[in-house]
Amino acid sequence: MSRPKLARAAARSLVLPLLLAGCAAMHPQGTAPPPQPPAGDPTALTLTAEAALKRGDCRTAAEAYAQAALTGDARLARRATEVALACEHLPAAWAAATRWRTLTPQDRDANALYALVALKLYRTADARAAVHDYCRSTLAESGAGSASPEAAQASPAPRRGKPAHDQGVGALADLISLLLEETEPSAVLTAMSAVPEPTASAPQTLVLFGELALAAYDGKRAEAYAQQALAHDPKDFAALRILARSYVLRGDAAHAIATARSAAEVDPVRGGLELAEIFASLDRTEEAHQQLESLRGSAVPAAEIDRRLALLAFQSGDLKEAQQRFTALLASGESGEAAQLYLADIAAREGDPERALAEYRRLYDSSVAVPARSRAAALLFERHARTDSARTEALTLLDDYAAEHPEDELQLTLAKAHLLADHGEADASLTLLAGALERHPQHPSIEYDRAVILDQAGQVHESVSALEQLLAARPDDPSLQNALGYTLADHSLELARAEGLIRRSLSVMPDNPAALDSLGWVHFRRGDARSAAGTLERAYAIDHDAEIAAHWGEALWVSGEQGEARKVWAAALAREPQSKPLKATLERFIPDAK
Image 1 (cartoon, rainbow, N blue to C red):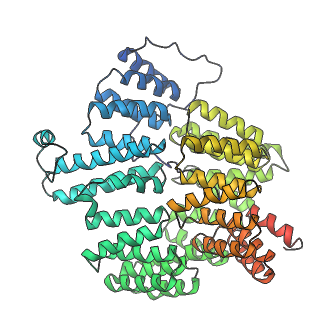
Image 2 (tube, rainbow, N blue to C red):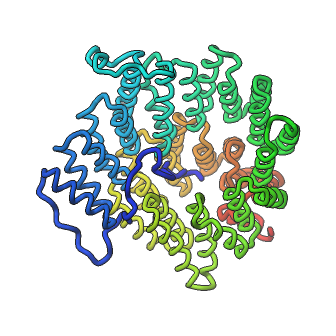
Image 3 (cartoon, rainbow, N blue to C red):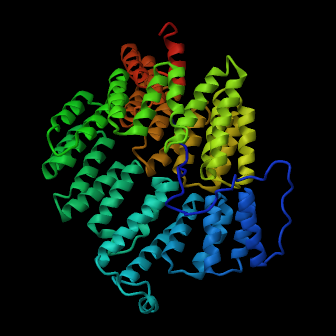
């Protein structure tokens, strides 16, 4: 928990309508790489790239297209950028996107994808420049402004049917959605500082920034954006919603509930649901339940109330009620695939792997195939202790889907790597990641996961060295600062430096539960269990993660509050009965616990 995974896409639909049907993102086994075309010949390079796509060699395709783009036109540079992004080849994507933006500096799409690649590579200043140009181009197109007199003369007439002001905010919302698809919210929030006026101070923009600040775990900034929007309109529902949630992040329950009630007065339907969400976020499950039931007979559809009640039961650890409610939803035709996935998860949490596997199998070719297959594979690996065929079946589940859905290849490769590492096969996991880096050179997610798995394998110094190298290249990356700080703290190494790194991370994302957990853990390692317990309690209030509960309970126990520690562990175990970190902690302190 204390080293959150770097953001990665679940899909490419927002970025590319790309044709990788035959691309398995690797050289076919047993074949030599194709001959290289003449350097600088864009036509030959393009043919090489397309041929590579057809035979499943994504890296060659990306590199050939990027090379072709260096002397090609804007259309070729665009295609090269899209192919490289779809192939997760970030150096090629950067070269192609840079060329495209150089050729067409006022092209909104060029600036959008340039900003995306820049953020994926943690080139924040470059991303800010592209965000600024994207917004100025939008203003120029809408007639609300322009980047220069020349751009104003060249820009098309304003689009009819939508005010120029709304076009600018709408385009910005599209850009934020695109960037969030594949990059960290904190980095996107930083890049948004380049949005020019008048777009930056529009009430709708302030709401967008408030939502982004919430996603980046910065409750104070979210509150500030919400208050600015409310200064324009005290009854702005979206701003009230952000304000209520910012109070939750900052631990101010009274103001969170009062603000949610104000939102319910503005909009009884959406506000009523929001009040229930606030109660749930504050772990006031019974009040959330009552609030949802009070909405029956209102304009809220019964199926929506039932769905939220099912989720509430699941999240609070009442698996019996959750199973009954999700079964009813499934029978009624509501929330079909989602309900099926939750039923499978419930079976797994209840320790019934056969029933869970049967439920997951129903979803192998559904819209939730990736999580269903990944969780089924984990269960099969648990069975591997009894039969070798289970391991083969588990890996085949992921490999088969990756072959049919190359857009998910990287995500599934990383899932495989963690699956192997979690079950004592660290060497196989690291070999898998080495191959992934061959296909996706310099990819931050792969490099990060490699460092995490090195630590998991007991190669602590190698893990620290890997994180040090990544941080040297990205010194302002808060996730890396937290990851290195936590790794040092967990092994009682350089504790003063570890705390400094974690506090730097918290300066960017002050309410991030993973970083707060790390801060609490470094305090614990430094012998201050009472201070650690307070920080860990706050982290757990934001995200009821079992590993945070394990740390919090341990700090309480060492502080002499064994009864409170037992309560924390029991509540967390009800939510996540299969949590390995929590079970390991319980075995150390309460060996006879069931």
